[in-house]
Length: 222
Image 1 (cartoon, rainbow, N blue to C red):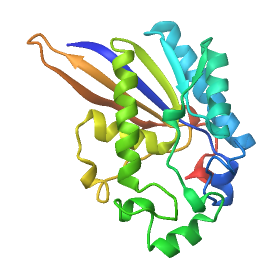
Image 2: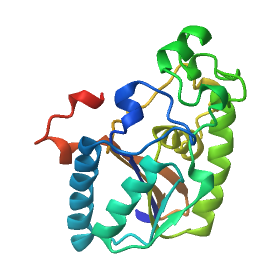
Image 3: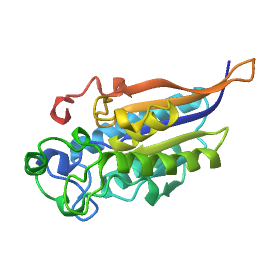
Image 4: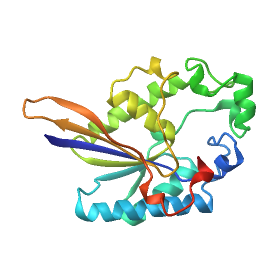
């Protein structure tokens, strides 16, 4: 069995919008908390140590929101990689929900965005499945461009869900009934395997690994 392509997705560290319980869209995201920066520093140290003994990362990408940019810069420094900002790796479009308390948005929608995944959860927002479909299309193109390489993305939790549906071929229509753990600074890795018979398929090798955070209190961002 040969691994031909690796996609590692690191969720950003705890952000101020997370602590405040607010929708952190492009207009109102103000970046990481001190705790969130500590989380990403621990993740970066772990990945740097792994890179010294395992396959090196070929490219590092992130999206444009401040919490992703901060996370990406910390990883780039530790791994000695240039950081590529890709607008296609941004999170959902929140429309008028941007900056509002999540509790108010969910009360008005009668649930989180994924509970009625084909409906926008606020005026001008994506639907959950609309976001998953758009993000998956972009990820597919990115992976095609980096076929055979080892890619790292500093991303939103929603990007991990998009990769799950894309690479494991789980229909987005199931998204209201399935979920993934995506803790802050959690590590998820997909691997494309190629066997001796010429078969190729993606494997979810690591999901939401936070072992690097075990020596710090992490419950505040659950």
